[in-house]
Length: 120
Image (cartoon, rainbow, N blue to C red; front, side, top):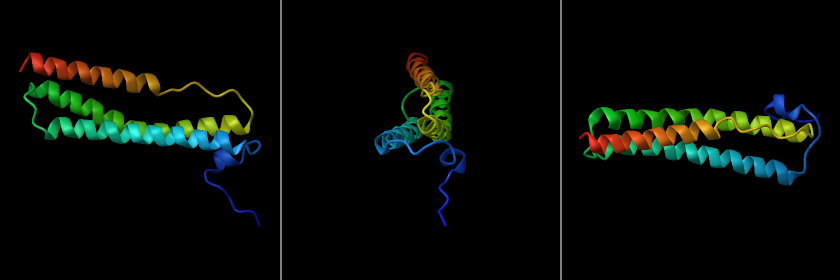
């Protein structure tokens, strides 16, 4: 009896792709997980380090970073599944849905930190 692979919604589709492509997809997933951890750490550090910033801007920047970090992890899983399914079905790879939101969130938090310095 063949062992079922998780998640079935990915592995029950199409043909087994070249292992190099699946492993590259996994490395991309792990890079997004590292990004998620870094965003969480940055948000926590902004609060814990006690920088001389305006409180409202510091808190807002921290929240933006932490919420983005929390959202990035499940989005990384979803992206991995989308890309793996496309590889198995010999379809074009879908566009990344979270590169732009993460870019915007980091930019917004950076602007909030600058404003926090200016209005302290």
